[in-house]
Amino acid sequence: MILEARHVRRRVRGRTLLDDVSLTISTGEVLGLVGPNGSGKSTLMRLLAGLVRPDRGHVILDGRPMADLSQREIARRIALVAQSAETADRITVRDAVALGRTPWLDALSPWSAQDDAEVAHALRRVDLAHLALRDWSTLSGGERQRAHIARALAQTPQILLLDEPTNHLDIRHQLSVLDLVGGLGVSTVIALHDLNHAMRCDRLAVLQDGRLQALGPPAEVLNPAILAQVFGVRASALIDPQDGSRIMRFHPID
Image 1 (cartoon, rainbow, N blue to C red):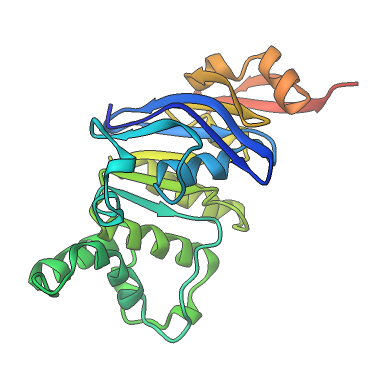
Image 2 (image 1 turned 180 degrees about the horizontal axis):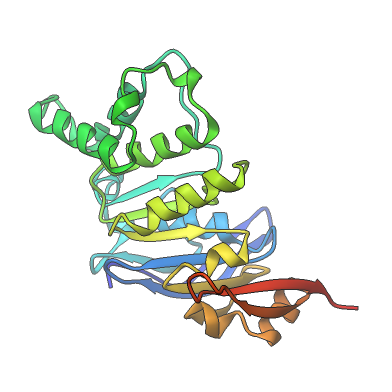
């Protein structure tokens, strides 16, 4: 366990966005966050990233309350790729990814060969090394998303937070990003809309109206009761004859 939310609550302008949510992220696992729009996924991501603080409860990073850590200390351990992540057009892919090294730089630790190596490694991990000198504005949506992930990886984080990274991508690029995330070997929290995509995760946290409704392996938590209560659907489970994976078809509840 390297990251934990303990009974966190978050209110904004009198509205409760999260209420008494507790969960842990273990080393090397992929934890998926699922739930309807407005269920609190992005708010929980921002709390886990240390961008906002809970009104009640605590976020614990490596055994220490996140409130006791500086933003630099947090950024050296946690990298967030937000839904609205963007980068200025007049920049190369390599320079965009190099921004991920910012938490490690200061007057006593200027840019070094080690930073060059981390950027190059991050580009290789997302298969973008051949596009390092390309102008950002020339990238496709899928390439940009991979570059955002590379920038996060250049931070050399212990934990990667991805807020709906497949939004606005075609299905081929969605699968490419999910395959990439699954093969990184980094502790990852990923918010997803597509429940079949969510089946790839090690565990799922199901949110509804800011509360945690279920937490556990995908096949257990995406049960008929949760699907009906939280998503308002019933599902038929199918087995893919090609690889034996479980696939769900969804139907509205009459």
